[in-house]
Length: 162
View (cartoon, rainbow, N blue to C red):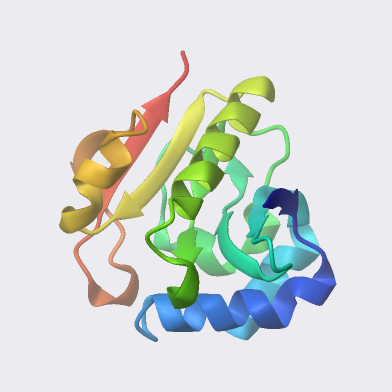
């Protein structure tokens, strides 16, 4: 296994994994992922399985804003490399690689990188059933998010380093 950052040639595989991991209204489109890759490829963490396939990925940009908003998902130009907060938009694993801890390995890498980069912390939103999962990594539930992305109730979770 290898963890690396994305390159433009990863676009199709990333879009494929995203499409099978989220309902259409919630997942990022191919065009959205293309836009993200064009602005912040170093904020895509990819796990390559032993067979060389991208098995899982995490992505999101950095911002000075402390809370995740719906606007952020499709506006990669909001990325601020000097920002205090690492946002996470997707944590996804291709179905054939699930239940192996790959997403957890990536989350641990994102946490380590954000700390090393001097961020204040990391913010993500998730459905209520995933709150216990993210809590295992140190994320704290801040309650219902202002995000209504995909017409779903999301919970904002934060891990603070300060």
